[in-house]
Figure 1 (cartoon, rainbow, N blue to C red):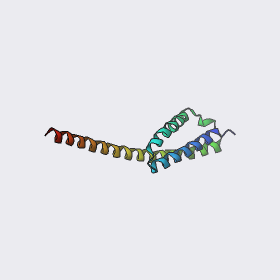
Figure 2: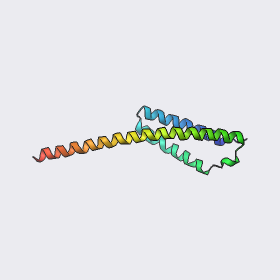
Figure 3: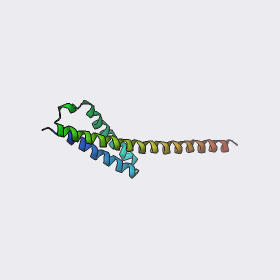
Figure 4: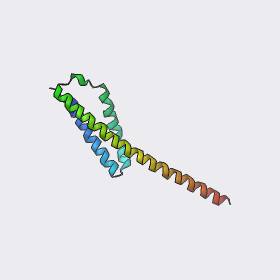
Length: 106
């Protein structure tokens, strides 16, 4: 029995949990660095032949994939919230800069 696929999926789940912890800590710079490796590993899954797995490994892989999808959806919500926050801050900075320019022009 070759369960390296399941081990890879479990490692992805661990990385996913670590990324979520970084999001909760608002450690966005570290998150940005770590998410690249996670994405590369996740993309490698597209070349995996799940049909070659024994039934038990396939079931474990399915469970891991379902959990990954659910956790990735949560991460995406957090990323979108962060994007919205940054967008609002950038907008406020532009308004502030515009106000400063208008004030000094007078």
